[in-house]
Image (cartoon, rainbow, N blue to C red):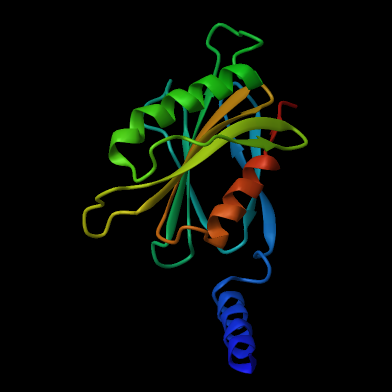
Length: 185
C-alpha cells in the first residue's frame, strides 16, 4: 500500500516537472495589415516574429518561433473579404472552413476523425483541431494544431507545428489567438 502511494506521488512529481507551471510573460505586438489597420497579438516575450509577404497584393503571413531551437512554429495568414462581405468571417463560415481543412488531412493522420474545438475570445471567434502525423520524415514536426479565427473584419488562418503534443507553446499560441484584436484607427 505504501509502495503504491509512493509510486503515485512520484508520478505526479514527474508530471509536474515536465509541464511549465506558468506561461511566459507576454507583450502586445502590432502587425500592420495594409488597408485593414493593425492586428494586435499578445505574444510571449521571447518569441521571434517576422512577417512574410510574397507579393504586394497578397495577404501577409506572420511567423512566430521560439527564441532558440525549433520546438514549434506558428504561422498565421491574414485574409479579408475582397468584396467587403460582412459575414466573411462569421462563426458558421469559419467552422465549415476548419472542418473541411481537417477532413483533407485525415488520410495522413493518426486520428480517424477531426474533433473541432471552439476558440472564443473577447474580440474573436474561431475553431481549431489538433492532429498527429502518421509518418513524419526525420526532422519534421509530428503534431499540428490548425484553425481559423475571425478578428474584426479579418480572418486569421493559423497552423501551429509542434514537437511535443501538449506543449505550453501551443497553449500560448491559442491564448494569443483568443486575445487577437484588429485596430482600424
